[in-house]
Image 1 (cartoon, rainbow, N blue to C red):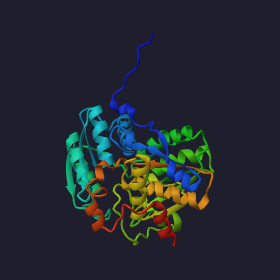
Image 2 (cartoon, helix red, strand yellow):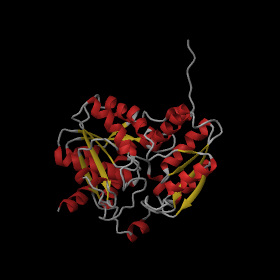
Image 3 (cartoon, one colour):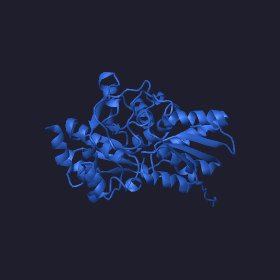
Image 4 (cartoon, rainbow, N blue to C red):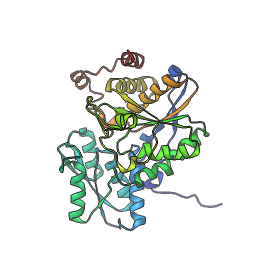
Length: 338
């Protein structure tokens, strides 16, 4: 009898379940399916990008034993880089906008990352968190992961997320829906699915204040249309990961609709998720209501709600920001279609 093979934590990124969202599937007459990315070792879909960025750098010889990885991140990529980095012998320095949830900062520090919060500034500002990370890498000889423009990010999804969804749906997937942060998830997954079946519809779910709805709908980056509390998504430029991809449809999703989805999934499905997951699922529901019934629609459940309890699951914070956790999904969609 052969001995079983065992692997360290970095070998267990991906292969997450594809969960049927029962209530929303019944509501739309479609199969609404969520990829349970909160089950990755670092707790989010960004573990896939982190693993891809690290292993690609190792193959290229730019990341060597004992090196330090630095990255500008809203949190989840930093968590993934820290978890996988520790497993492979690296230290991490994380530059993060100070607007992100305090749970993320504490989690990163607990994991052992050096965390440097900085004022939130647009990409056009030289003191944007990504530019700070790049400069520090150049000055100190560290490896800058560069998740936004390093296409090893989308390649990781091309090699894992896309094939997993294709296999888990037995090739019956009709549409894939994802929001854009770096663009890696939407780009890499859709490139694979479109190769397997060009008829698969690719849908971008975009929060207010981001530019991707405008880009995929009108070909411009006009994003002067509001704001969102969603963390880790909402892009104002075309990153290298987004170049040369086909997106067939884009939807604007407001925070209240996403929040209604998050709370319904918590109360009726037992899924504890963050707002970016709510935006993704809301986008899937919008597409289903517009084009169903009978479709199989896959989306990404990005991470758990644990890192957002001081905001999304805090009644006082919700009240202060005009968000109602008791508003049903049906009511939220009706309000926005009126």
